[in-house]
Image 1 (cartoon, rainbow, N blue to C red):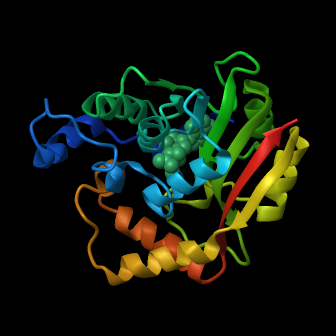
Image 2: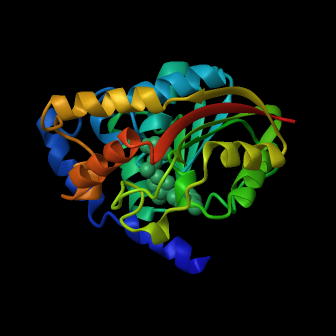
Length: 272
Ligand SMILES: C[S@@+](CC[C@H](N)C(=O)[O-])C[C@H]1O[C@@H](n2cnc3c(N)ncnc32)[C@H](O)[C@@H]1O
């Protein structure tokens, strides 16, 4: 387990990330000028289909202003900032990567949302919260880094109120071995993919009832095809976060999706 966590942390080590962000964001204006979550959208949504996927998942989950939302594996905080700005809800983010949490706090200061959002370093398998604390738990492109799915989904269930919702947007195993390196794992040792059916079974076994289930593989393929056709990505982008090989990691994800080796699923469950 420790080795697994260390390897995942190492993948997202992002040394000097906040300083790099300060440098690239200078192009958007002086440091005392507030940025909007949309301005950061090409940089801070670390999952397939970016901001559009977060917006769709939040709508499907029924996020509302009076809710308390937990984002597990919150990355550099893009989804959390978008939700807070769009719905007026409070969002707490937890992530295994300390540099990501530091960057999430910095970017949240830059958007002037620090009063609505908080970020802390924590493992999704040991959430530092009381039982029944949240209305919604969000999990976007995180589960593929976690081998102990039963524990992940039980922890998620534990911190949700009864009747609360669990919204997940994740990568699922298709047919055939995926090509590596990938955005969440440069080698198979950091990747713990399940098929869509096995994912659903593991979630339901943790005390959830399915409300919505979508196979988003086609939408993801179309998005990758468009990315390929539109040339180099706009700046700033996730290359700042993950380093110069990010283009290769993303290209491989697109290739695996096109070949049916990987799929994308969106689902919402109710805590029972
Ligand atoms: C591909 S990124 C997605 C980030 C964010 N959810 C988003 O969509 O922008 C995966 C994130 O999951 C985090 N992560 C992986 N394993 C974790 C764990 N056991 N507990 C908490 N966070 C974890 C990583 O540090 C990374 O920030």
